[in-house]
Image (tube, rainbow, N blue to C red):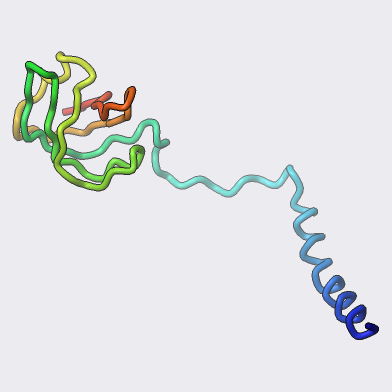
Length: 113
């Protein structure tokens, strides 16, 4: 029993400096620097328009990773936010897009040529 208590006291003594250092940091310690990537809400992904269907407002894109919706690079058809967006592009155009899940439908909400 005495050995167990001695081991516990040794462990407590060894851990004390670590707890003291953490407490000394306190709430006034500056936050670590953020990485230089833009906020997720502003991220645009490189893509190439493969097909545009003006009747349905659908745009087929070969796109890079869409991190905000957890989608790897692939070719997929998306709903355009509005018909005007679909009318601005043609098959073969290189674009930058923002895709979001809008009411359960993957939708191109921002498109730049």
